[in-house]
Length: 366
Ligand code: PMP
Image (cartoon, rainbow, N blue to C red; front, top):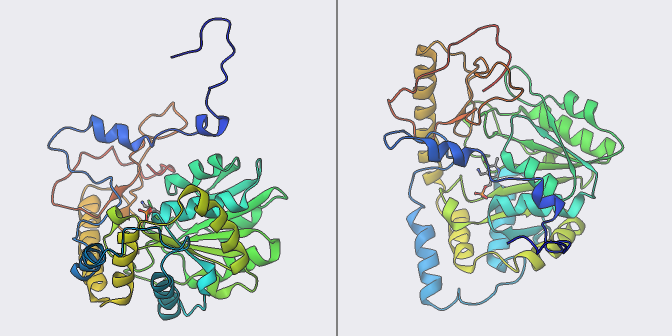
């Protein structure tokens, strides 16, 4: 209810929250008919690996998941994350540099909240994952979307050109949502150099690191000479655990200590049962990941074939589970295109949506 006439509202909302809104993709879901096939959701449709589920059940039954854990996570989970980085990324991350979070989403929030001052700029790929823009605004920062190369990867030169004295951070996301683009190792080396030389933070969102079909995933953290790279990762996509809400940040101790301040007050700790499940997922057999990735690759190929049969030009997604056909903007007069700019290939089937008229001279990605 609005305040009574003559009373100046003291309970209005913050400018930061008024600057963001619920993702427009929700409206598209609601508008869709019952027989529509949902290609919009970025989540795997596999069950969480049995050993991960069972670890949570065991912890619950043993009464080990009833209480707060340490803010940064159970020591066993933190060690499992450190070992994962040694195994997969050849990185030596100290346990003090790791915080288990409520999904990659919270990890991104911590990274930006701890490093962005009001008015500072955060650069990120556009099109890119919707949270980069919103979380920048929530941190009081200024979002700066960066155009992509023709193959939908982010050119390090574009990042460098956009750095100003107000730039706090840039986000790298490979494999990327919503394009499926995979940055090559040389780009990652360049991102690290840029973070080092310009003394800006590189937030590397690596939640799709294992879902790579062509090319190779490397983390900019491997190449950085300073501690200017913060890695965001999660069990969500790799182990089909989106509902468990378990991610993490990996950083230097001093950066993790700042992020832990935010995490401590906003979250206390990640959900304890989820931490036990994540530990089992990270330390258990990794063959389940290979099986899921093989299936995602088949679905990617199917979606590419279908889209190409429709006459659409689609840069080949090298990872994740998205495809972004090149189409003409549907609303010629508007400066922005409809929200459904990318299709998730995670649930691909043989059904064909009606495409917009292809136009090879079009420059917009929808
Ligand atoms: N980063 C990217 C690029 C994503 O696509 C997502 C989820 N769609 C996230 C982070 C957040 O993942 P989580 O479910 O672990 O919060």
